[in-house]
Length: 614
Ligand code: AGP
Image (cartoon, rainbow, N blue to C red; front, side, top):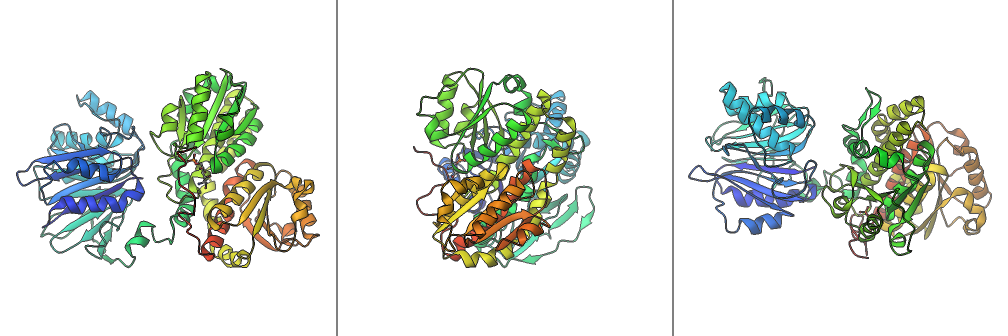
Protein backbone atom coordinates (compact mmCIF):
# COMPACT_ATOMS: atom_id res chain seq x y z
CA UNK A 1 0.00 0.00 0.00
CA UNK A 2 1.18 3.56 -0.61
CA UNK A 3 0.48 6.87 1.04
CA UNK A 4 -1.07 9.84 -0.73
CA UNK A 5 -1.54 13.41 0.52
CA UNK A 6 -2.80 16.63 -1.09
CA UNK A 7 -3.35 20.27 -0.17
CA UNK A 8 -5.16 23.28 -1.60
CA UNK A 9 -5.53 26.51 0.37
CA UNK A 10 -3.98 29.65 1.71
CA UNK A 11 -0.64 28.25 2.87
CA UNK A 12 2.53 27.06 1.12
CA UNK A 13 1.71 23.49 0.19
CA UNK A 14 5.19 21.95 0.18
CA UNK A 15 5.90 21.80 3.96
CA UNK A 16 2.41 20.45 4.64
CA UNK A 17 2.88 17.75 1.99
CA UNK A 18 6.32 16.69 3.19
CA UNK A 19 5.15 16.50 6.81
CA UNK A 20 2.16 14.50 5.61
CA UNK A 21 4.41 12.05 3.79
CA UNK A 22 6.43 11.49 6.96
CA UNK A 23 3.18 10.67 8.76
CA UNK A 24 2.36 8.14 6.02
CA UNK A 25 5.80 6.58 5.70
CA UNK A 26 4.64 3.52 7.67
CA UNK A 27 2.51 2.74 4.60
CA UNK A 28 5.47 2.46 2.26
CA UNK A 29 8.93 3.88 1.77
CA UNK A 30 10.38 2.72 -1.57
CA UNK A 31 10.29 6.20 -3.12
CA UNK A 32 8.51 9.53 -2.70
CA UNK A 33 7.47 12.45 -4.84
CA UNK A 34 5.62 15.76 -4.89
CA UNK A 35 3.82 17.83 -7.54
CA UNK A 36 3.23 21.58 -7.06
CA UNK A 37 1.64 24.31 -9.18
CA UNK A 38 3.60 27.52 -8.54
CA UNK A 39 2.49 31.13 -8.85
CA UNK A 40 3.42 31.23 -12.56
CA UNK A 41 1.20 28.23 -13.30
CA UNK A 42 4.15 25.81 -13.72
CA UNK A 43 3.47 22.21 -12.68
CA UNK A 44 6.67 20.99 -11.01
CA UNK A 45 7.15 17.30 -10.19
CA UNK A 46 10.05 16.18 -7.98
CA UNK A 47 10.72 12.51 -7.15
CA UNK A 48 13.41 10.50 -5.30
CA UNK A 49 14.09 6.81 -4.61
CA UNK A 50 14.10 5.83 -0.95
CA UNK A 51 12.51 7.46 2.05
CA UNK A 52 10.88 10.88 2.29
CA UNK A 53 14.10 12.35 3.65
CA UNK A 54 15.73 11.65 0.26
CA UNK A 55 12.99 13.67 -1.43
CA UNK A 56 13.47 16.53 1.00
CA UNK A 57 17.18 16.66 0.25
CA UNK A 58 16.46 16.60 -3.47
CA UNK A 59 13.94 19.45 -3.17
CA UNK A 60 16.24 21.76 -1.22
CA UNK A 61 17.44 23.35 -4.48
CA UNK A 62 14.09 23.25 -6.25
CA UNK A 63 11.20 25.69 -6.76
CA UNK A 64 8.73 24.44 -4.14
CA UNK A 65 6.38 27.40 -4.29
CA UNK A 66 2.66 26.97 -4.64
CA UNK A 67 -0.48 26.69 -2.50
CA UNK A 68 -1.70 23.54 -4.24
CA UNK A 69 0.06 20.20 -4.41
CA UNK A 70 -0.04 16.44 -4.13
CA UNK A 71 2.54 14.01 -2.77
CA UNK A 72 3.11 10.25 -2.57
CA UNK A 73 5.20 7.70 -0.68
CA UNK A 74 5.38 4.42 -2.56
CA UNK A 75 5.11 0.72 -1.73
CA UNK A 76 5.93 -0.76 -5.14
CA UNK A 77 3.45 -3.12 -6.72
CA UNK A 78 4.15 -2.55 -10.43
CA UNK A 79 7.67 -1.60 -11.45
CA UNK A 80 10.89 -1.44 -9.54
CA UNK A 81 11.23 1.16 -6.78
CA UNK A 82 13.19 3.83 -8.66
CA UNK A 83 12.79 7.48 -9.58
CA UNK A 84 11.12 6.81 -12.92
CA UNK A 85 8.43 4.65 -11.31
CA UNK A 86 7.99 6.98 -8.33
CA UNK A 87 4.80 9.06 -8.19
CA UNK A 88 3.58 11.66 -9.13
CA UNK A 89 3.35 10.82 -12.83
CA UNK A 90 2.96 13.45 -15.54
CA UNK A 91 0.57 12.99 -18.42
CA UNK A 92 2.30 13.04 -21.80
CA UNK A 93 1.70 16.78 -22.27
CA UNK A 94 2.87 17.40 -18.69
CA UNK A 95 -0.37 19.34 -18.13
CA UNK A 96 -1.58 16.78 -15.57
CA UNK A 97 0.06 15.05 -12.60
CA UNK A 98 -1.36 12.11 -10.67
CA UNK A 99 -0.66 10.10 -7.52
CA UNK A 100 -2.24 6.71 -6.83
CA UNK A 101 -2.55 4.11 -4.09
CA UNK A 102 -3.86 0.76 -5.32
CA UNK A 103 -3.55 -1.71 -8.18
CA UNK A 104 -5.12 -1.28 -11.63
CA UNK A 105 -5.57 -4.88 -12.72
CA UNK A 106 -6.47 -4.12 -16.35
CA UNK A 107 -3.67 -1.61 -16.88
CA UNK A 108 -2.01 -3.71 -19.58
CA UNK A 109 -5.11 -3.64 -21.78
CA UNK A 110 -5.60 0.08 -21.20
CA UNK A 111 -1.92 0.72 -21.93
CA UNK A 112 -2.05 -1.20 -25.21
CA UNK A 113 -5.02 0.88 -26.30
CA UNK A 114 -3.27 4.13 -25.49
CA UNK A 115 -0.09 3.03 -27.27
CA UNK A 116 -2.18 2.43 -30.38
CA UNK A 117 -3.24 6.09 -30.06
CA UNK A 118 0.42 7.05 -30.07
CA UNK A 119 0.94 7.49 -26.36
CA UNK A 120 4.37 6.70 -24.98
CA UNK A 121 5.24 5.75 -21.40
CA UNK A 122 8.24 6.55 -19.25
CA UNK A 123 7.52 4.16 -16.36
CA UNK A 124 6.43 0.56 -15.76
CA UNK A 125 3.58 1.63 -13.51
CA UNK A 126 -0.15 1.16 -13.80
CA UNK A 127 -0.54 4.72 -12.50
CA UNK A 128 1.01 6.35 -15.54
CA UNK A 129 -1.51 4.50 -17.67
CA UNK A 130 -4.32 6.12 -15.70
CA UNK A 131 -3.11 9.70 -16.11
CA UNK A 132 -2.58 9.14 -19.84
CA UNK A 133 -6.11 7.72 -20.07
CA UNK A 134 -7.51 10.83 -18.36
CA UNK A 135 -5.64 13.11 -20.76
CA UNK A 136 -6.69 11.05 -23.78
CA UNK A 137 -10.32 11.10 -22.61
CA UNK A 138 -10.31 14.83 -21.97
CA UNK A 139 -8.82 15.69 -25.37
CA UNK A 140 -10.91 13.27 -27.41
CA UNK A 141 -14.26 13.86 -25.72
CA UNK A 142 -13.63 17.59 -25.13
CA UNK A 143 -14.74 17.39 -21.51
CA UNK A 144 -13.55 19.01 -18.31
CA UNK A 145 -11.07 17.30 -16.02
CA UNK A 146 -13.67 15.97 -13.57
CA UNK A 147 -15.68 14.35 -16.35
CA UNK A 148 -12.52 12.93 -17.91
CA UNK A 149 -11.53 11.41 -14.57
CA UNK A 150 -15.03 9.94 -14.15
CA UNK A 151 -15.01 8.40 -17.62
CA UNK A 152 -11.49 7.03 -17.19
CA UNK A 153 -12.26 5.47 -13.81
CA UNK A 154 -15.32 3.79 -15.30
CA UNK A 155 -12.87 1.80 -17.44
CA UNK A 156 -10.60 0.83 -14.58
CA UNK A 157 -10.71 -2.61 -12.91
CA UNK A 158 -8.94 -2.70 -9.57
CA UNK A 159 -8.37 -0.51 -6.55
CA UNK A 160 -7.43 3.17 -6.46
CA UNK A 161 -7.16 6.26 -4.31
CA UNK A 162 -5.97 9.03 -6.61
CA UNK A 163 -5.36 12.77 -6.63
CA UNK A 164 -4.80 14.71 -9.82
CA UNK A 165 -3.70 18.27 -10.71
CA UNK A 166 -4.17 20.25 -13.94
CA UNK A 167 -1.76 23.15 -14.33
CA UNK A 168 -4.36 25.00 -16.42
CA UNK A 169 -6.72 24.88 -13.41
CA UNK A 170 -4.54 25.72 -10.38
CA UNK A 171 -7.65 26.37 -8.33
CA UNK A 172 -8.82 22.75 -8.43
CA UNK A 173 -7.72 19.52 -6.73
CA UNK A 174 -9.55 16.34 -7.77
CA UNK A 175 -9.45 13.04 -5.87
CA UNK A 176 -11.29 9.72 -6.10
CA UNK A 177 -11.28 6.25 -4.54
CA UNK A 178 -12.31 2.67 -4.93
CA UNK A 179 -10.96 -0.03 -2.65
CA UNK A 180 -8.13 2.14 -1.24
CA UNK A 181 -8.83 4.63 1.55
CA UNK A 182 -9.24 8.39 1.02
CA UNK A 183 -9.99 11.07 3.61
CA UNK A 184 -10.79 14.77 3.00
CA UNK A 185 -9.84 17.27 5.70
CA UNK A 186 -11.82 20.50 5.93
CA UNK A 187 -9.88 23.51 7.24
CA UNK A 188 -10.43 27.28 7.21
CA UNK A 189 -10.10 28.24 3.51
CA UNK A 190 -8.08 25.10 2.87
CA UNK A 191 -8.64 21.44 2.09
CA UNK A 192 -6.53 18.33 2.62
CA UNK A 193 -6.73 14.84 1.15
CA UNK A 194 -4.84 11.80 2.43
CA UNK A 195 -4.83 8.00 2.63
CA UNK A 196 -5.80 8.30 6.27
CA UNK A 197 -6.21 11.09 8.79
CA UNK A 198 -2.63 11.10 10.11
CA UNK A 199 -1.44 13.97 7.82
CA UNK A 200 -4.64 15.91 8.53
CA UNK A 201 -5.23 15.64 12.28
CA UNK A 202 -2.88 18.50 13.26
CA UNK A 203 -4.75 20.98 11.00
CA UNK A 204 -8.40 20.03 11.46
CA UNK A 205 -10.64 17.45 13.08
CA UNK A 206 -13.36 17.84 10.43
CA UNK A 207 -13.10 15.05 7.90
CA UNK A 208 -15.08 13.29 5.20
CA UNK A 209 -14.38 9.60 4.56
CA UNK A 210 -14.79 9.23 0.79
CA UNK A 211 -16.78 6.14 -0.24
CA UNK A 212 -15.98 3.71 -3.07
CA UNK A 213 -16.47 5.07 -6.60
CA UNK A 214 -16.79 8.64 -5.39
CA UNK A 215 -14.92 11.60 -6.86
CA UNK A 216 -14.18 14.79 -4.92
CA UNK A 217 -13.57 18.27 -6.36
CA UNK A 218 -11.95 20.73 -3.99
CA UNK A 219 -11.79 24.51 -4.61
CA UNK A 220 -10.97 27.12 -1.97
CA UNK A 221 -14.06 29.16 -1.09
CA UNK A 222 -16.43 26.48 -2.41
CA UNK A 223 -18.11 23.58 -0.62
CA UNK A 224 -16.73 20.09 -1.10
CA UNK A 225 -18.22 18.69 -4.33
CA UNK A 226 -18.73 14.90 -4.15
CA UNK A 227 -20.32 12.80 -6.87
CA UNK A 228 -20.05 9.18 -7.92
CA UNK A 229 -17.91 8.36 -10.95
CA UNK A 230 -21.21 8.11 -12.80
CA UNK A 231 -21.95 11.69 -11.72
CA UNK A 232 -24.62 11.07 -9.11
CA UNK A 233 -24.41 13.94 -6.59
CA UNK A 234 -23.66 12.86 -3.01
CA UNK A 235 -24.15 14.79 0.24
CA UNK A 236 -20.84 14.83 2.14
CA UNK A 237 -21.06 13.51 5.71
CA UNK A 238 -18.66 15.56 7.86
CA UNK A 239 -17.24 13.68 10.87
CA UNK A 240 -15.06 14.70 13.82
CA UNK A 241 -11.72 12.98 14.37
CA UNK A 242 -11.32 11.55 17.89
CA UNK A 243 -8.18 9.42 17.60
CA UNK A 244 -4.69 10.70 18.48
CA UNK A 245 -2.01 10.87 15.83
CA UNK A 246 -0.20 7.82 17.18
CA UNK A 247 -3.43 5.81 17.27
CA UNK A 248 -4.24 6.90 13.74
CA UNK A 249 -0.97 5.58 12.33
CA UNK A 250 -1.92 2.22 13.79
CA UNK A 251 -5.42 2.43 12.36
CA UNK A 252 -6.84 2.75 15.85
CA UNK A 253 -5.03 -0.36 17.13
CA UNK A 254 -2.68 -0.04 20.12
CA UNK A 255 0.17 -1.70 18.22
CA UNK A 256 1.16 -2.30 14.61
CA UNK A 257 1.36 -6.03 15.38
CA UNK A 258 -2.31 -6.23 16.37
CA UNK A 259 -3.27 -4.13 13.34
CA UNK A 260 -1.33 -6.49 11.09
CA UNK A 261 -2.88 -9.58 12.71
CA UNK A 262 -6.32 -8.13 12.02
CA UNK A 263 -5.33 -7.10 8.47
CA UNK A 264 -4.85 -10.74 7.46
CA UNK A 265 -8.31 -11.36 5.93
CA UNK A 266 -7.69 -8.37 3.64
CA UNK A 267 -3.99 -8.97 3.02
CA UNK A 268 -4.61 -12.62 2.06
CA UNK A 269 -7.35 -11.44 -0.29
CA UNK A 270 -4.86 -8.95 -1.78
CA UNK A 271 -2.21 -11.67 -1.95
CA UNK A 272 -4.51 -14.00 -3.91
CA UNK A 273 -5.97 -11.26 -6.10
CA UNK A 274 -5.36 -12.00 -9.78
CA UNK A 275 -3.86 -15.37 -8.80
CA UNK A 276 -6.61 -17.52 -7.29
CA UNK A 277 -9.63 -17.40 -9.58
CA UNK A 278 -12.30 -19.37 -7.76
CA UNK A 279 -14.87 -18.76 -10.51
CA UNK A 280 -12.54 -20.32 -13.10
CA UNK A 281 -11.24 -22.91 -10.60
CA UNK A 282 -7.73 -21.86 -11.39
CA UNK A 283 -4.49 -20.57 -9.87
CA UNK A 284 -2.23 -18.41 -12.04
CA UNK A 285 1.23 -17.70 -10.66
CA UNK A 286 3.23 -15.88 -13.34
CA UNK A 287 6.56 -16.88 -11.75
CA UNK A 288 5.56 -20.53 -12.14
CA UNK A 289 3.98 -20.21 -15.58
CA UNK A 290 7.10 -18.54 -17.00
CA UNK A 291 9.39 -21.23 -15.53
CA UNK A 292 7.27 -24.36 -15.63
CA UNK A 293 9.99 -26.67 -16.95
CA UNK A 294 12.41 -25.74 -14.19
CA UNK A 295 9.89 -26.90 -11.61
CA UNK A 296 8.63 -29.93 -13.54
CA UNK A 297 12.18 -31.20 -14.17
CA UNK A 298 13.47 -30.43 -10.68
CA UNK A 299 14.99 -33.45 -8.97
CA UNK A 300 14.92 -31.58 -5.67
CA UNK A 301 13.65 -28.32 -4.22
CA UNK A 302 15.74 -26.60 -1.56
CA UNK A 303 14.00 -24.00 0.58
CA UNK A 304 16.24 -21.53 2.39
CA UNK A 305 15.05 -18.94 4.90
CA UNK A 306 15.31 -17.70 8.49
CA UNK A 307 12.94 -17.39 11.43
CA UNK A 308 9.27 -17.19 10.60
CA UNK A 309 10.03 -17.49 6.90
CA UNK A 310 11.77 -20.80 7.64
CA UNK A 311 8.58 -22.00 9.32
CA UNK A 312 6.65 -21.11 6.17
CA UNK A 313 9.22 -23.15 4.27
CA UNK A 314 8.60 -26.19 6.49
CA UNK A 315 4.89 -25.99 5.71
CA UNK A 316 5.73 -25.74 2.01
CA UNK A 317 7.74 -28.95 2.32
CA UNK A 318 4.62 -30.87 3.38
CA UNK A 319 2.55 -29.38 0.57
CA UNK A 320 5.10 -29.73 -2.25
CA UNK A 321 5.94 -33.34 -1.35
CA UNK A 322 2.27 -34.24 -0.96
CA UNK A 323 1.01 -32.57 -4.14
CA UNK A 324 4.04 -32.43 -6.45
CA UNK A 325 6.01 -35.41 -5.12
CA UNK A 326 9.32 -33.57 -5.46
CA UNK A 327 11.82 -34.09 -2.61
CA UNK A 328 12.16 -30.92 -0.53
CA UNK A 329 14.90 -29.89 1.88
CA UNK A 330 14.33 -26.92 4.17
CA UNK A 331 17.51 -25.16 5.25
CA UNK A 332 18.34 -22.44 7.74
CA UNK A 333 20.07 -19.95 5.44
CA UNK A 334 22.86 -19.34 7.95
CA UNK A 335 23.76 -23.05 7.98
CA UNK A 336 23.17 -23.64 4.27
CA UNK A 337 25.58 -20.91 3.18
CA UNK A 338 28.51 -22.28 5.19
CA UNK A 339 28.17 -26.05 5.28
CA UNK A 340 29.45 -26.58 1.71
CA UNK A 341 26.13 -28.00 0.49
CA UNK A 342 25.80 -30.16 -2.61
CA UNK A 343 23.88 -28.03 -5.15
CA UNK A 344 23.05 -29.29 -8.65
CA UNK A 345 22.09 -27.40 -11.80
CA UNK A 346 18.65 -29.02 -11.87
CA UNK A 347 17.92 -27.96 -8.29
CA UNK A 348 15.27 -25.33 -7.65
CA UNK A 349 16.10 -23.13 -4.68
CA UNK A 350 13.21 -21.21 -3.09
CA UNK A 351 14.20 -18.26 -0.91
CA UNK A 352 11.54 -16.96 1.48
CA UNK A 353 12.00 -13.53 2.99
CA UNK A 354 9.52 -10.84 4.06
CA UNK A 355 12.11 -8.06 3.92
CA UNK A 356 14.08 -9.42 0.99
CA UNK A 357 17.21 -8.17 2.74
CA UNK A 358 18.12 -10.94 5.23
CA UNK A 359 21.87 -11.29 4.83
CA UNK A 360 22.07 -15.06 5.39
CA UNK A 361 19.29 -15.80 2.92
CA UNK A 362 20.78 -13.47 0.32
CA UNK A 363 24.17 -15.17 0.71
CA UNK A 364 22.57 -18.61 0.52
CA UNK A 365 20.93 -17.94 -2.84
CA UNK A 366 24.04 -16.24 -4.23
CA UNK A 367 25.92 -19.45 -3.41
CA UNK A 368 23.21 -21.57 -5.07
CA UNK A 369 23.13 -19.29 -8.10
CA UNK A 370 26.89 -19.63 -8.58
CA UNK A 371 26.38 -23.40 -8.70
CA UNK A 372 23.75 -23.06 -11.42
CA UNK A 373 20.56 -23.66 -9.45
CA UNK A 374 17.30 -21.88 -10.39
CA UNK A 375 16.40 -19.29 -7.76
CA UNK A 376 12.73 -18.51 -6.97
CA UNK A 377 11.96 -16.04 -4.19
CA UNK A 378 8.84 -15.35 -2.12
CA UNK A 379 9.21 -11.78 -0.90
CA UNK A 380 7.10 -8.87 0.34
CA UNK A 381 9.27 -5.96 -0.78
CA UNK A 382 9.32 -5.25 -4.52
CA UNK A 383 12.83 -4.67 -5.80
CA UNK A 384 14.58 -5.78 -2.59
CA UNK A 385 17.98 -7.46 -2.83
CA UNK A 386 16.73 -11.07 -2.71
CA UNK A 387 14.13 -10.74 -5.53
CA UNK A 388 16.71 -8.80 -7.57
CA UNK A 389 19.18 -11.70 -7.33
CA UNK A 390 16.49 -14.31 -8.02
CA UNK A 391 15.63 -15.74 -11.45
CA UNK A 392 11.91 -15.40 -10.70
CA UNK A 393 9.54 -15.22 -7.81
CA UNK A 394 6.21 -14.28 -6.30
CA UNK A 395 5.56 -11.13 -4.28
CA UNK A 396 3.21 -11.50 -1.31
CA UNK A 397 1.77 -7.96 -1.67
CA UNK A 398 0.68 -7.52 1.98
CA UNK A 399 2.02 -3.96 2.31
CA UNK A 400 4.67 -2.90 4.82
CA UNK A 401 4.89 -5.15 7.85
CA UNK A 402 5.97 -2.78 10.61
CA UNK A 403 5.75 -5.01 13.68
CA UNK A 404 9.03 -6.88 14.17
CA UNK A 405 7.08 -10.08 14.84
CA UNK A 406 5.96 -11.30 11.45
CA UNK A 407 2.25 -12.15 11.15
CA UNK A 408 0.51 -11.11 7.89
CA UNK A 409 3.67 -11.83 5.89
CA UNK A 410 3.77 -15.38 7.27
CA UNK A 411 0.22 -16.25 6.24
CA UNK A 412 0.85 -14.71 2.83
CA UNK A 413 4.06 -16.72 2.43
CA UNK A 414 2.22 -19.93 3.30
CA UNK A 415 -0.53 -19.01 0.83
CA UNK A 416 1.94 -18.28 -1.97
CA UNK A 417 3.85 -21.52 -1.33
CA UNK A 418 0.62 -23.54 -1.21
CA UNK A 419 -0.45 -22.00 -4.53
CA UNK A 420 2.94 -22.94 -5.98
CA UNK A 421 2.68 -26.55 -4.71
CA UNK A 422 -0.81 -26.85 -6.21
CA UNK A 423 0.34 -25.44 -9.57
CA UNK A 424 3.30 -27.84 -9.77
CA UNK A 425 1.20 -30.84 -8.72
CA UNK A 426 -1.58 -30.02 -11.18
CA UNK A 427 0.91 -29.55 -14.03
CA UNK A 428 2.77 -32.75 -13.16
CA UNK A 429 -0.46 -34.69 -12.85
CA UNK A 430 0.50 -35.84 -9.36
CA UNK A 431 -2.49 -33.91 -7.95
CA UNK A 432 -5.95 -34.94 -9.06
CA UNK A 433 -8.21 -32.31 -10.65
CA UNK A 434 -10.83 -33.05 -8.02
CA UNK A 435 -8.47 -32.42 -5.09
CA UNK A 436 -6.99 -29.37 -6.85
CA UNK A 437 -10.43 -27.83 -7.35
CA UNK A 438 -11.47 -28.58 -3.79
CA UNK A 439 -8.40 -26.84 -2.35
CA UNK A 440 -8.62 -23.87 -4.75
CA UNK A 441 -12.23 -23.29 -3.77
CA UNK A 442 -11.37 -23.59 -0.08
CA UNK A 443 -8.51 -21.09 -0.50
CA UNK A 444 -11.13 -18.55 -1.50
CA UNK A 445 -12.91 -19.15 1.83
CA UNK A 446 -9.83 -18.67 4.02
CA UNK A 447 -10.04 -14.86 4.51
CA UNK A 448 -13.58 -15.16 5.90
CA UNK A 449 -12.54 -18.08 8.09
CA UNK A 450 -9.62 -16.07 9.47
CA UNK A 451 -12.11 -13.29 10.24
CA UNK A 452 -14.09 -15.79 12.32
CA UNK A 453 -10.99 -16.79 14.29
CA UNK A 454 -10.18 -13.13 14.94
CA UNK A 455 -13.59 -12.88 16.59
CA UNK A 456 -12.10 -14.82 19.54
CA UNK A 457 -9.56 -12.09 20.25
CA UNK A 458 -11.27 -10.90 23.45
CA UNK A 459 -11.54 -14.47 24.80
CA UNK A 460 -7.86 -15.15 24.08
CA UNK A 461 -6.94 -11.87 25.72
CA UNK A 462 -8.94 -12.87 28.81
CA UNK A 463 -7.27 -16.24 29.33
CA UNK A 464 -3.82 -14.96 28.34
CA UNK A 465 -3.76 -13.26 31.74
CA UNK A 466 -3.50 -16.64 33.49
CA UNK A 467 -0.22 -17.48 31.72
CA UNK A 468 1.93 -14.41 32.19
CA UNK A 469 3.56 -16.12 35.23
CA UNK A 470 5.09 -18.82 33.01
CA UNK A 471 8.83 -18.96 32.43
CA UNK A 472 8.55 -21.65 29.77
CA UNK A 473 6.02 -22.87 27.21
CA UNK A 474 5.99 -25.90 24.91
CA UNK A 475 4.10 -25.81 21.62
CA UNK A 476 3.16 -29.10 19.94
CA UNK A 477 1.79 -29.98 16.54
CA UNK A 478 1.83 -32.76 13.96
CA UNK A 479 2.07 -32.75 10.17
CA UNK A 480 1.27 -29.36 8.63
CA UNK A 481 0.82 -28.00 12.15
CA UNK A 482 4.23 -28.98 13.51
CA UNK A 483 5.74 -25.85 11.83
CA UNK A 484 2.79 -23.87 13.23
CA UNK A 485 3.78 -24.99 16.72
CA UNK A 486 7.31 -23.72 16.05
CA UNK A 487 5.93 -20.43 14.71
CA UNK A 488 3.70 -19.98 17.76
CA UNK A 489 6.68 -20.57 20.03
CA UNK A 490 8.76 -18.03 18.12
CA UNK A 491 6.02 -15.40 18.35
CA UNK A 492 5.80 -15.86 22.13
CA UNK A 493 9.51 -15.77 22.84
CA UNK A 494 10.37 -12.84 20.57
CA UNK A 495 7.79 -10.41 22.01
CA UNK A 496 7.13 -11.62 25.61
CA UNK A 497 10.68 -12.89 26.34
CA UNK A 498 9.18 -16.14 27.74
CA UNK A 499 11.18 -19.18 26.64
CA UNK A 500 9.14 -21.39 24.31
CA UNK A 501 9.89 -24.37 22.12
CA UNK A 502 7.98 -25.92 19.25
CA UNK A 503 8.09 -29.70 18.87
CA UNK A 504 6.51 -32.43 16.80
CA UNK A 505 3.97 -33.77 19.31
CA UNK A 506 5.28 -37.34 19.09
CA UNK A 507 8.71 -36.11 20.15
CA UNK A 508 7.41 -35.48 23.67
CA UNK A 509 8.23 -39.06 24.65
CA UNK A 510 11.86 -38.59 23.55
CA UNK A 511 12.74 -36.14 26.31
CA UNK A 512 10.55 -33.05 26.61
CA UNK A 513 7.84 -34.88 28.54
CA UNK A 514 10.25 -34.79 31.50
CA UNK A 515 9.58 -31.06 31.60
CA UNK A 516 5.80 -31.33 31.98
CA UNK A 517 4.50 -29.63 35.13
CA UNK A 518 1.78 -27.22 36.13
CA UNK A 519 4.28 -24.39 35.77
CA UNK A 520 4.86 -24.96 32.05
CA UNK A 521 1.81 -24.42 29.82
CA UNK A 522 1.58 -26.64 26.74
CA UNK A 523 -0.05 -25.31 23.57
CA UNK A 524 -1.26 -28.11 21.30
CA UNK A 525 -2.33 -27.42 17.71
CA UNK A 526 -4.87 -30.20 17.12
CA UNK A 527 -7.29 -29.53 14.26
CA UNK A 528 -9.38 -32.56 13.24
CA UNK A 529 -7.23 -33.79 10.32
CA UNK A 530 -4.26 -36.01 9.64
CA UNK A 531 -3.03 -37.71 12.79
CA UNK A 532 -5.73 -36.15 15.02
CA UNK A 533 -6.28 -39.22 17.17
CA UNK A 534 -2.56 -39.48 17.89
CA UNK A 535 -2.32 -35.88 19.05
CA UNK A 536 -5.32 -36.42 21.31
CA UNK A 537 -3.29 -39.20 22.93
CA UNK A 538 -0.39 -36.78 23.35
CA UNK A 539 -2.73 -34.38 25.17
CA UNK A 540 -3.84 -37.18 27.46
CA UNK A 541 -0.18 -38.04 28.22
CA UNK A 542 0.37 -34.41 29.24
CA UNK A 543 -2.74 -34.21 31.36
CA UNK A 544 -1.77 -37.48 33.11
CA UNK A 545 1.33 -35.61 34.30
CA UNK A 546 -0.64 -32.54 35.51
CA UNK A 547 0.36 -30.41 32.55
CA UNK A 548 -1.89 -27.46 31.57
CA UNK A 549 -3.03 -27.57 27.98
CA UNK A 550 -4.21 -24.82 25.64
CA UNK A 551 -5.59 -26.59 22.57
CA UNK A 552 -6.34 -25.13 19.14
CA UNK A 553 -9.06 -27.38 17.72
CA UNK A 554 -11.62 -27.55 14.94
CA UNK A 555 -15.02 -26.01 15.59
CA UNK A 556 -17.30 -28.46 17.40
CA UNK A 557 -14.50 -30.65 18.74
CA UNK A 558 -15.96 -32.01 21.98
CA UNK A 559 -13.33 -34.72 22.46
CA UNK A 560 -10.41 -32.37 23.21
CA UNK A 561 -12.68 -29.96 25.03
CA UNK A 562 -13.20 -32.64 27.68
CA UNK A 563 -9.47 -32.96 28.45
CA UNK A 564 -7.81 -29.60 27.67
CA UNK A 565 -7.77 -26.65 30.07
CA UNK A 566 -8.43 -24.05 27.42
CA UNK A 567 -9.77 -24.55 23.90
CA UNK A 568 -9.67 -22.17 20.93
CA UNK A 569 -11.76 -23.26 17.97
CA UNK A 570 -10.95 -22.63 14.30
CA UNK A 571 -13.19 -23.44 11.32
CA UNK A 572 -12.63 -26.74 9.54
CA UNK A 573 -10.67 -26.56 6.30
CA UNK A 574 -8.42 -28.61 4.02
CA UNK A 575 -5.52 -30.10 6.02
CA UNK A 576 -2.89 -28.21 3.94
CA UNK A 577 -4.68 -24.92 4.70
CA UNK A 578 -5.09 -25.45 8.47
CA UNK A 579 -1.88 -23.49 9.26
CA UNK A 580 -3.55 -20.33 7.89
CA UNK A 581 -6.19 -20.66 10.61
CA UNK A 582 -4.37 -22.36 13.51
CA UNK A 583 -1.58 -19.76 13.54
CA UNK A 584 -4.01 -16.89 14.23
CA UNK A 585 -4.81 -17.83 17.88
CA UNK A 586 -1.08 -18.32 18.49
CA UNK A 587 -0.32 -14.83 17.15
CA UNK A 588 -3.02 -13.36 19.41
CA UNK A 589 -1.95 -15.40 22.45
CA UNK A 590 1.66 -14.21 22.12
CA UNK A 591 0.51 -10.63 21.54
CA UNK A 592 -1.74 -10.48 24.61
CA UNK A 593 0.73 -12.17 26.96
CA UNK A 594 3.41 -9.69 25.82
CA UNK A 595 1.10 -6.69 26.27
CA UNK A 596 0.06 -7.82 29.75
CA UNK A 597 3.74 -8.21 30.62
CA UNK A 598 4.33 -4.64 29.45
CA UNK A 599 6.73 -5.62 26.67
CA UNK A 600 7.46 -3.42 23.64
CA UNK A 601 5.41 -5.51 21.23
CA UNK A 602 6.28 -3.69 18.00
CA UNK A 603 9.98 -3.30 18.75
CA UNK A 604 11.06 -6.13 21.07
CA UNK A 605 14.46 -5.83 22.75
CA UNK A 606 17.54 -6.97 20.79
CA UNK A 607 15.54 -7.54 17.57
CA UNK A 608 15.31 -5.77 14.20
CA UNK A 609 12.70 -6.08 11.49
CA UNK A 610 15.28 -7.03 8.93
CA UNK A 611 18.53 -8.79 9.86
CA UNK A 612 20.81 -7.38 7.20
CA UNK A 613 23.94 -8.51 9.01
CA UNK A 614 25.25 -12.01 9.69
C1 AGP B 1 9.74 -13.29 12.79
O1 AGP B 1 8.67 -12.83 13.59
C2 AGP B 1 11.03 -12.56 13.07
N1 AGP B 1 10.87 -11.16 12.92
C3 AGP B 1 12.21 -13.14 12.31
O2 AGP B 1 12.36 -14.50 12.67
C4 AGP B 1 12.10 -13.05 10.78
O3 AGP B 1 11.14 -13.96 10.31
C5 AGP B 1 13.47 -13.44 10.18
O4 AGP B 1 14.43 -12.50 10.59
C6 AGP B 1 13.45 -13.51 8.65
O5 AGP B 1 13.17 -12.26 8.12
P1 AGP B 1 12.81 -12.18 6.56
O6 AGP B 1 11.56 -12.93 6.36
O7 AGP B 1 12.65 -10.70 6.30
O8 AGP B 1 13.94 -12.77 5.79
